[in-house]
Length: 130
Image 1 (cartoon, rainbow, N blue to C red):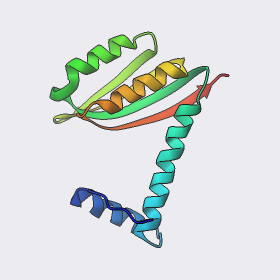
Image 2 (image 1 turned 90 degrees about the horizontal axis):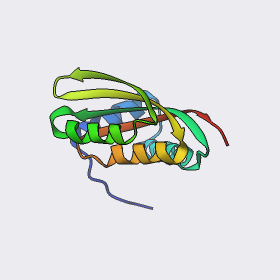
Image 3 (image 1 turned 90 degrees about the vertical axis):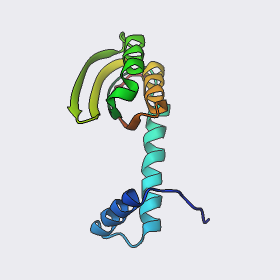
Image 4 (image 1 turned 120 degrees about the vertical axis):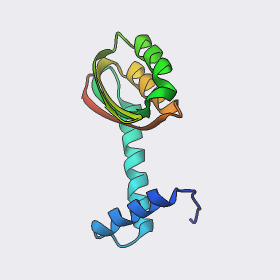
C-alpha cells in the first residue's frame, strides 16, 4: 500500500540519517518498523489492567501550557508520586513517576498527548497487577 505523509524536512533528514546508520535497507522498512513500535507501545498501554506503576516522560513549551499542565497534575495528584522538571530554554522536560489504576494512568497519558504544546510523550509501565 502506498501513502503520503507531510513531514518537516529536518525531521525527515534526521530519520534518513538514523535508518541509514542502522544499516536498514530502505526508508520504507524503517517506517514500517517505526509504525510497528508505535502500535506495540500503544497496545501495551491499552492492555494494562489493575494497578500499574509507570514513568511518563514528555517535553513541552513552558509558556504555552504551564497553567493547563498544573491543572492536569492536580487532577491526577492521587496517581502522581513525584515529578522531575528541567528547563532547556523555552522547552521543558518533565518526568512523572506515578502509580494507580491502569485506566487512570492511560487517561493521564492521553490528556498529555492532547496538548498541542507537548511534543512527545513516552510511557514505561514498570509493574502491572491483574
